Amino acid sequence: MLDTQDSRHEGPDMGLLEDWISRHDLAISLGVSEDTLWRWDMRRTGPQSIKLGRKVYYRRSTVRSWLEAREQTRKTPSRSRR
Image (spheres, rainbow, N blue to C red):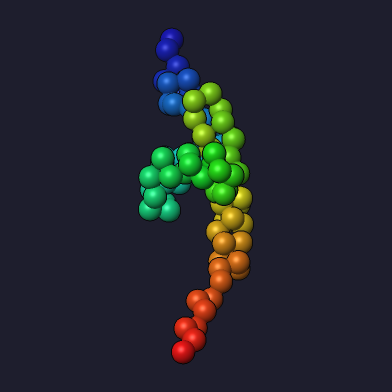
């Protein structure tokens, strides 16, 4: 008898990666290209990431912390002196 509830045919178990976001999805969320995220990774200016095979993932809480840190360190524009 064939088991129709066989989980091997339902795709990968995303429960393990639910706290992580792919580079592709993060690029869409931030409104930047995947190339931009790659450059940020190379320059170590973006959020920390991990690589699993050919895929790159970012922990959602790390991305939020990175965004908050960028907000906090943003400098106010200097006033022009006459």
